[in-house]
Image (cartoon, rainbow, N blue to C red; front, side, top):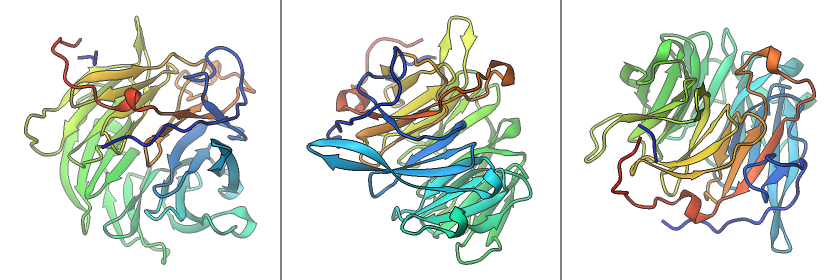
Length: 364
């Protein structure tokens, strides 16, 4: 099928770095300066402040801060650190207090960066390691542990005060993505495996199942209320799955990021904390806002001229960051050397993201 709490005030952002038609999803979006020299792999907002962090294939982890000036807001570059030997960085996560960023990547290391300090040689402290590159990382608030998922088919749990993992769990295949909300952790693996865990205390596997989608999983995101998750695939589809019975709610899947006979990967799914609605971004260069409860598309933005690799809503929900960067979905033959890698911030207005209520018509 297809989809046919008050929000924080919209932020007026200033500045840009790309001109021309279809550079961003809205003409007033702000292009963040110095977003990197290679593909943008992840972007995340601090849970406590207007700090934005991105990771790149050029080995960098970058942080910007939204600064108020004359009634307007501007994103100013704050700091940058690098993984060792410029190894690609694939994901990052904040600590709940917003003071620390954890990052992982192709150097097989789990690294920790205190934003108030400059690490030696500008390389964040290593607190853990895998035998293969690490694809995803998250923080477990209930136990103050960090979890990392690698291409070595392992989940590892870390206490930042020691080098050895405090626990490990075997995965059925490579980790492609993971997410944590409260006591729910969901992991998407190669082979279309999806595993959910209860991480309230010692992590316990809750359910292991095959993805409801027919092709390779690309991204996964837990619902803000931790009752389920959304999974996106390379086939331009999203699956909405509940981990337990919820009155009036059923799991389903829908098509998206498709144009005529062309099918595009869903590269990232991110939820809005206040409304529980969500965004998908894809290899078609399109951003969509959705309401899973009423099965509606709330907003479809015009396509930009490059693929969108990742996205994130700010903690207040009034800013939406997204990347404009090649995602390699068509291989090296379609890569144009010198293609910009840009990070944009969209000021979210309530009408774009707030549920509109159930429609009476059917959906395709």
